[in-house]
Image 1 (cartoon, rainbow, N blue to C red):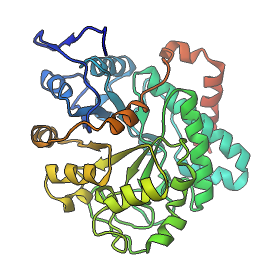
Image 2: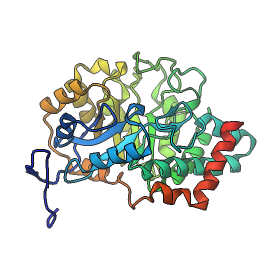
Image 3: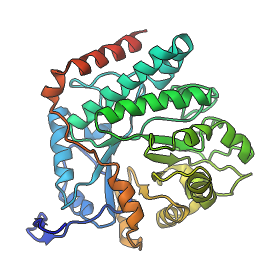
Length: 360
């Protein structure tokens, strides 16, 4: 980045502009600590994931994201799990209550065209509100099929039919894009068939590869044309395909997702502190397994001690291909302020549609 001045750290020492690294970390509260600022300047860090604990009000969230973006020379990717329904991190101080994706699936069964429009407007509201507060992307949509058994998926899934899931996900991603945000499909190749929650257990899906790809994996093949610029694999073991969970499996990430399905977007690991990731070993072994499988970025959430351990021990060379993929997830244009957003007729119309769906 020739021609730009280096920024200075909290001690006044200049540091160079850094490319995004392969590790996404979190922060503990509503304001950055000096320790967290130092962590964000680590060259291995490429992003920050936020949670409900990081939200006090819109003004505070906007200030927090500004400080995260300013933590080093090149802005870090700021992400959040903000899907709608029970997975919506920010709910107060003007944020719109978004419906669970299953509500859009039910609407599809009555009126597919109306459901497509509602999905687009849901994506637009979701992205516009987050971006007005400085958040770059949300890990959405869930592409898992609704088999009615998954503890982790539930009403986060659009539908049982892979074709409906793909169509509604495409519409939602279009709405995100209209507000300058990219989408992330999860959890490849599918988490919906197993009941166990990978946050607390190690799920095992016994189905053969071709059945998985024909059903659960189908949306990834249909949406791999750039509509879904990033994907998150499942912490699920598919023993008839590989002994490792999908996110640690070169067979799944490189051979199947990238080569067989031709996917060229970012691949995020799911949170490496989840129980479903424990089969790979300690935090370093988990990160190395995910990166070796073909992931571009790994997530370490809720354990700053493990994040620091990983950053101290991980030895990787920045991959220019991964760097370019990650940079493509950054917003392509500036977002309007919250007040300017409220004045937009399109935004208010989209909000009303969400309120109607939630109230049904």
